[in-house]
Structures are given as C-alpha cells and as structure tokens.
Image 1 (tube, rainbow, N blue to C red):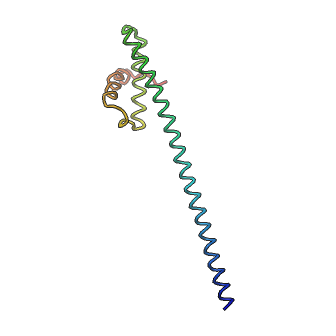
Image 2 (cartoon, helix red, strand yellow):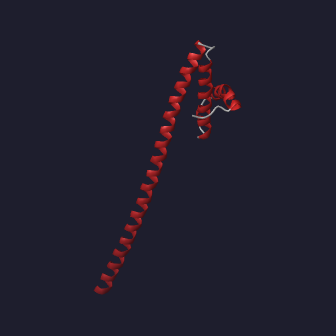
Image 3 (cartoon, rainbow, N blue to C red):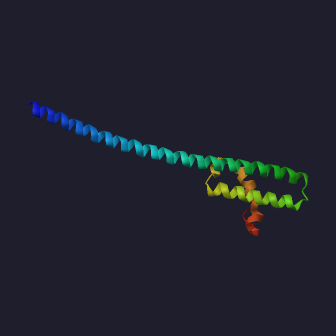
Length: 121
C-alpha cells in the first residue's frame, strides 16, 4: 500500500511539474505578446507625434501664406505639407480620426502636388 501511495504521489508530482512547465511557456508567450503590443504602441505614438508636428507646421505656413498670398514659396510649402500629411493619414488608415472638413481641405490644397508630382523629401 505504501508503494502504491508513493507511486501515486510521484505521479501527481510529475503532473504538477508538467503543468508548471506549460504555465511557464504560457506566461512566456503572453510576455512576448505584450512586448509586441508595446512596440506597436510606441511606433503608433511616434507616428502620431510626428503627424501632430506636421499639422502644426502646416497651420503656421497656412497663416503666413494668408498674410502673404503672393509668396509662391509659401504656397509651394503649403501644398507640399498638405500632400505629405494626407499621404501619412491614408497610409496608416487614420482617416476616421480626422474631421472630414480637414481632410477635404488637405485634399484640395494638395491637389497640385499630385498633379505636378512634387518629389517626396
């Protein structure tokens, strides 16, 4: 009876060790998944910060152009920035995050860039 009991205890302990290994594998996979999620979130944050800066620059150029509508260099910068912003928004599928009026403005202002083929920086 004691042999049976010790064999049973050994069997239960073996099962426990196997489950512990499976749990460690499971936890390891979850940590990897979280690392991937954190990396993707960091990349998205970098993109959003970049896009915010580009939109602020666009706004400054737009204000300067409205004060100097004869300045072709400002017009070129305005068209180029609108085009780059719109391309980023489309590339990363962020359209739903922006007001349709703003997207329409970017589309209108950037039209000459797509027709003239303004080179990307």
